[in-house]
Image (cartoon, rainbow, N blue to C red; front, side, top):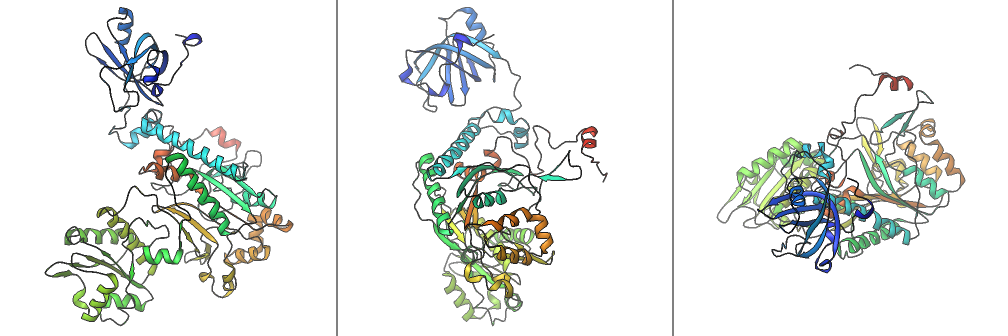
Length: 593
């Protein structure tokens, strides 16, 4: 049936309310459910704006009633009729005060029974929903996520436009510069044996745009990284990417605090206070055991190394003598919840996931103390430990000691988050933003036998630390900054190196010969000969930002067609084998494993 012409839709389903009562309207969508009450047929019709009730009663023709009785879930229909007030109102939906008494009905497409119910309360496995993603995307929650994502991108574009930024596209087929995550490679047909890479970020191109005089750039950029997936990672993702010239860290952070404030006010009517809290990397690790701390709750780490530096307790003295650390957290009023059995479970988890030797504990009960280690301490050490942690009756002390301070931080940082959830310490209503600054510039890779860049090779060191590049590279701090929201890294960036001599020194520290540096980054180094302004920028993960705004557990919930942990698309069956002729055109062959 051709329903165009005079039969075009006049309203979306979710738009109708009492203001439309008495009007004749035309709506189109999918049948959510149909109910036959004997002489009266009710049909819930759904589109992306919501649901409206269609009513067929005995005042209508027999032919129309018969057609209505054939409707099944997910049939696509167009209905015309009179909007009127409902006798049995439904306060659960926005259109619950009205219904449409149908006078015309067109069945535009039938539907087989879906493999799961198109409803937010579905209990279908995620794998099944991803296989039939086009059906899953019909669910109101998924449609709300896609609409929210659209709004976030639009608000970001509007804000940066008002701030004088230009949106400029950068290439999707780029030169592979393997440093960090693995590249996705694309073989060239016309230059056989050579490969493009899909961009991990627009980093080099946006720096070249600063050199080209476009002093404020932004882009909603697609990026690709061939890495193992987690709940907040995907092999292809979207960044809100920007770069600015003639700026320092404060300028970049200020303009992006403004963006977040504008976004949350426009989208959610939430007022975000400025400026954001600031923590240096060292302070974040020392207090929270994480460079992306969730500061909505306490449970801060306490360093006990000074108290136990001369202890007779071997598990503590052994860790300290090897240059390690002894740190603890005090869970207030948790002695009843954290039983010996629960602590044993936490200990097993930390051993398996983080490789710690054990979890020392003290449960301070009203009439006694149950402890795995206090009998090995002097009373002076016990008193000093309690004082440092502010521990008292009803509290639980949890302590990790290890020759690796990094392992202690990672284990206690994870334990802190676990207890925050378990003890219900987290205020879910808060959007808690902060900046983490002064990251280390370099990290030594034991396996590779060289330093690697914490962020990327173009991050500038702090001016006062440049002299340490020769004598103590590991101590050099960078002009880098991460925006953190509720324990997630939301975005990050840095001020870039704009001095060719300093950039060459950086490449040397990373183990590149001059020839290797020019082979990988020659086009950038060549450009640096022609006047480079001071510049810096950052990028937000758009997917992750939407995930946190909507408070969903997985980044897949805010991406229309996501990949699973194996980097596969369950719906389309990608990746897949390709035709032999395609490989021959590229002079490629598959090596059998």
